[in-house]
Length: 384
Image 1 (cartoon, rainbow, N blue to C red):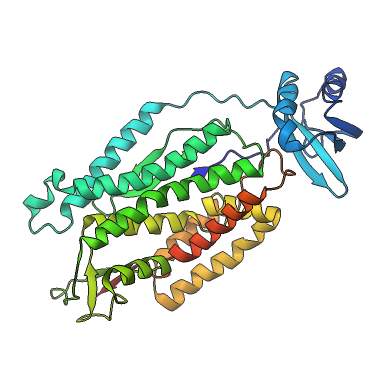
Image 2 (image 1 turned 180 degrees about the vertical axis):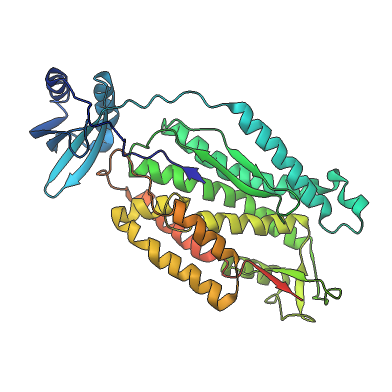
């Protein structure tokens, strides 16, 4: 998951911009942008809005435009206003300080230990076995490869587009978690250039993660056995993983039947640690592709639908609430709460005028189709 800096700067109202600086800026961009009118303190105090039209393709000239703005202490933001283009000067130059890399390293090591712990306890028959952390290497390596690929996909896409970005922050969650981690995220320390860059950064994570998750899942399933779903010991429960369209299809191709065939007494694949990591990889990717807010799917929705993407918030919340009612999956309650915090704000690029090219539009549509294929309505089911 990639979290983004907000584009709307909270500039103090008392900031005033010297008139000569505004004139210098207008002169510097004269060969790129024809100015019809200039408005101070629009759309926020301290901002300057030029309205007019570009003389060159914004996708081509934006980097040069930004360099000229930064020379005067501004960052350009491009918006469409009816039949005119608004070129807005933000009174800030994004130059974030270096991140504290040692925090990323400590969290990475702790997450390895927590996933080793979960992997060691997977299938353990005694406390002694559960404490042998080395036994969990297959699960730990598999899940860390998937999560690492996902976040590094974001990271390298951001670096390619020259967006300041942190290294991945992994989140360890030992003991109470069945996967040993709450995932990982990176933080973009400045806005991306345009919708094309926003799509690249947003979709690179899920696609890179799937490059590892799907082969790991297939290998794990091929080395797992199909068996009878035995009743749990008295007072205990067994845990069944849910089906997505893709997961059910992969199981059908490998085992020649739809699994599970029922509840207690039916047949199901007995996932080994690698298969479990692959299934978790699909689940994590699907959760990140939910098409709202700061999630990767929210970036995809924004580049396709613009500000109309915000209208997806309540339909998504209603669907998730419906899943709680009709499936009893309480996990969606947690996600509804999280989306109230992360689902309302969308990452807006500096240049919101340059459209997606055909290739990127196809990739964005593919990402939404992938979300449908890997979304799991009932992620986990406990059977007594």
